[in-house]
Structure formats: structure tokens, C-alpha cells
Image (tube, rainbow, N blue to C red; front, side, top):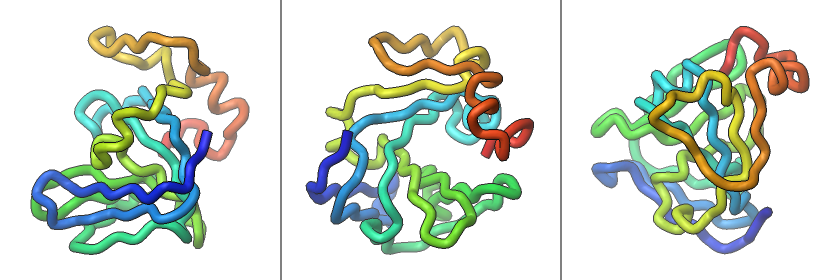
Length: 146
């Protein structure tokens, strides 16, 4: 699922503005791994956008979360902004809650469902994968969930 409409998002305090001005996913993916739970405080929900279409203005702090990826947040209010592999030109996994329009995106997948907290059951017909299933197809993240 993708669209090419412009999306605008921002952190809680508005210091960081993110614009997606080209093709982007219109489905939300959720990760329940323990690392994402600690980072998000509960539910980690994102949609993907190619780096070429993402413009970020304002102060951003990047945290090297693993050998594979960085996580970014606003240094003023602490809002989480994205997860992104270290590869040059890697896509952005943008935090869906920063974008009002993303509230209309359907849930398309959940990973690490065997680590999901009981307080966050998600409904619907979408892809669901355990840690073992996800890591079998993504061996680079095994034991080091980005």
C-alpha cells in the first residue's frame, strides 16, 4: 500500500517538522520487541518512506540503538521520530503518531507478537509474526532487534 500525497508531521513541541513529499507507505507496522517497547513506552507503530522524499527541519538527536540502526528523537520534548538503518539512503520508519493523516492508515503487520504486552492486543486481519519467524527472514537482526 502506498501513496504519493504530501504528509506533514511534527514532534509534540513542534520544534521538529517532517515532510514526506513523495511515495510512502499507507499502512502501519507495529513491533512488539522489548527494545521497541522500552523506546516507545508501549506500542511502536511506524510507516515507511524513502529517504529521498523525507525532509526534516529542526533539531534532531540520533541514538545509535544497535550496530544496524539509529533511533531519532526531538531533544526539546523527547518525541520519538524514526528508526533508520545506518545504510546511506535507507528508508525512514517514521513514527505514525507524528502525522495526523496516518491515523487513517490501516494496520498491516505486527512482529514479535510473542513479546507483545497483554494490555495492547490489536485486532484485524494482518500479518503477525513471532520473534523466531521474523528473525528467520531477517538474520541480521537476530538477537539485536534494531
